[in-house]
Image (cartoon, rainbow over all chains, first blue to last red; front, side):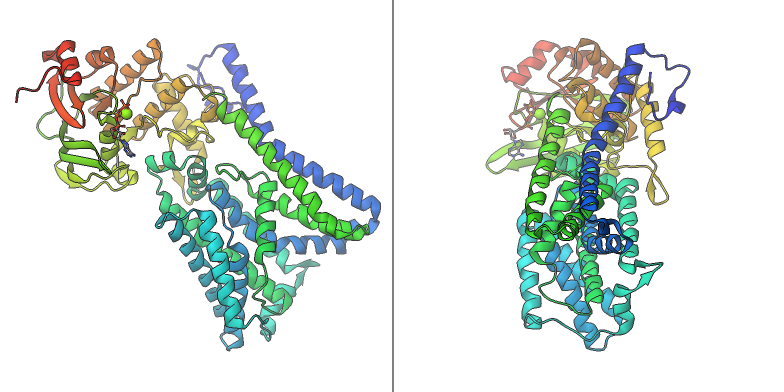
Length: 347
Length: 251
Ligand SMILES: Nc1ncnc2c1ncn2[C@@H]1O[C@H](COP(=O)(O)OP(=O)(O)OP(=O)(O)O)[C@@H](O)[C@H]1O
Ligand SMILES: [Mg+2]
């Protein structure tokens, strides 16, 4: 009776099925593939058109040096976007990312200046970020503060604390071994790009292959049903927000290594909004359940391409925001249309 | 028809009380369910049937009273606890995750793993096998639940509870969204559960279904147990009398 086109092995001899069921199953598969790829394909198309336009405008655009520059500009945003994708898929949001980014850099930076070995400083910096992420989860799970508010509160509190501690000043004087991690190249490609690829692969595996990712889609798709069916939704939140805090802090630490300084104002609202926007443009639903790391990578890349390309073809980079705004709203409109088509029509 | 082993109850509730603010949804409810038996729970709208199911399945925690599984006192403070205690539930309102496909929904909260990873292949083949065994016609286990009809969803929730391998199966209005043929199909599945030795508790408004499928009937009225009857020793008139309160329990 079954015909799932991608696994003909399921077809047992007893499974005789009316012809129309076969075709409707096959058609269903085609439609699903098209739907799940449509937004990504659309985004890839937009990227491609932009790349062509910029390349025609100035052939320097696709030079290897400029490509590296765009990749490097994408990396830190993309790294933060990975756990953000996991959180959005789980039906949450994390507006504290930009502040935890700065907190990571400042914490590790202060410790290094105090003479703590850099690997220890990095680990403590990530642990502090992770702990603040856990506080985010605690606020929303235990105190029932909606994640939007809990993480926004965390944003201001964490930014405030590190600004007070540093007096608002940047921290300098890191060991060379540490700054090399953010500034080195291997085979002509910045280390940072490798880190981003590794983190991207790890999060892709987490989201697509592990029960954390399956739980995320269930919790984001229907939290009450997920809970009623035995998924420990509170525990899930602690894991994803904690992970997000640690990874945001790690990205901030990498940023500090790249610039040889840690600034309490690094990241901030700009990074937070850019990351959330990149994730949503990448097809991850603000309403949970749906999303992909690949989409977030494209979304993050889009920012770098627009930003860099406009400069290269001598258009005032202030135009960037207009592009981003239009693309963001289009992405969400597409998501809404998709949800309406899929979930409400049969209710 | 009744092959139940009545020596030890699979599940026993003692004096369960549950309040929502000022509403007392359940008051001093006692219930015993045996392996190899179908216990039907009937009652008017708002009688507390779903609340009772949710207390047993860990969604609600009772304010008072005790739950025993196999004569052991258990504390079911979450649905995951109930699962661990061998209780699976088909909820009236919290059934499935719409944006996920059939096989993922069949394994919610219990994803099969190979090492660190979810074993997607096994999830698909087992879902397929279960649905085929239960003669549920779903063309493709990769279909999103949101694309299915209410009746199809209902059957899949039932199939999922069967799949979970739990010893005690709770069903809250499993036939509410079903047509005549599908209702008979659900009744067959539920009877098979009983025959394979499961303890089944089933909430239903459908008297025809209750009288043809269940072994015993527990009537809830205004949050209290109005009576428990053997199906073989009662009539619809008596049950309806207990539901509406025109007939009072003698004891
Ligand atoms: N989460 C809740 N919060 C507050 N009151 C509730 C809640 N759930 C149920 N109640 C109340 O408890 C009582 C019993 O509700 P319940 O859903 O158990 O009834 P039911 O017997 O399942 O009815 P139906 O046949 O309509 O499904 C009702 O008065 C209802 O309003
Ligand atoms: Mg009910």
